[in-house]
Amino acid sequence: MYNKSYSNNAFLIDATGFVLKYWFSIPPVKTRNFESISAFLGFSNFVLKFLSNYQPRYITFAFDESLGTCFRNNYYSDYKKNRELAPDELKIQLNLCRQFLDLIGLNNNASKVYEADDILNTMAINARKSKLKNIILTNDKDLFQMVYKDDIWWNYSDKKYSYEDLKEKLNFSPHNLSDFLGLMGDSVDNIPGAPGLGEKTAMALMGKYKNLENIFLNINDIQSSLGQKYKRFIKIINDNKKIIYLSKKLATLVYIEEIDKNISIFKRKAINIDKLDSFLINTGMKPGQKDSWLKEVREYGEIL
Image (tube, rainbow, N blue to C red; front, side):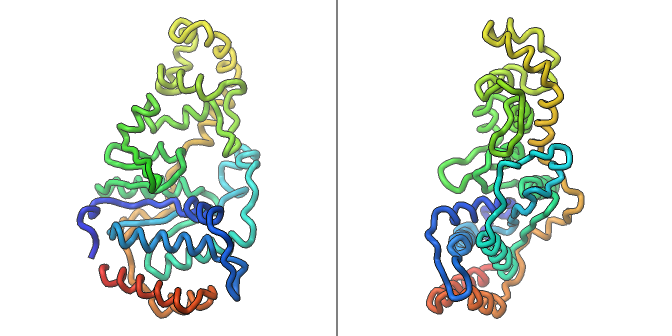
């Protein structure tokens, strides 16, 4: 069974974001086979509680494995160059998380070419075509651009935004978030943007003109529309048109044609209890904890 309240929803989960949350917040838990499984324990506990609370019919997870190999690096080699590769200990736990999802029958995806954001965006488009409403679980504001009329962006805590919420919050459509990032850049992802043009100015420009095309069409009216202090930004914007549009391209989520478009991949599959038992033993999990987990999984399995 599944919760009929969510029968028309697809839950799209930014898995790497949640794994990292537990990686940084939970002290190392050493076992006989691993230096630590704390991130795995935190993530798998989150998954089990989520399944118990919401009993989703359609659900998928996306992992990031594209740092340094992403297609975006082909046209901007410094993209995310400020990020360090995951340490081996974290890579091991990310792999454990994916194995766990496989064994409990939950769809999950990763790519060396595309980012998790692109995977989730693709899944959202496919779900929308099947008349499903997306609930996007993430703490990544870049995914605002995925939110359409019936969708929800949720950080699984105190922030939950609909399309209208985001439009009001930003003062422009969330679908044009990449235009905004094109102007100001994004230091987290090492996206350059226009030098000397910060968040406040980009927000004012987007609030007035709504997208880059309108900003360039009305470039000579910016001073009269927004005030004398914006005069110097006219030259900055004109001189950096190429880098602004490159930055927008870097920030824009893409659709991945290679991903299966059949919405059935979102549906929960059968749980392999025997293989899961062996898997948990191999992690070095304590017998009492393992048995408790298997009980939870069996209860989850009974509601399929």
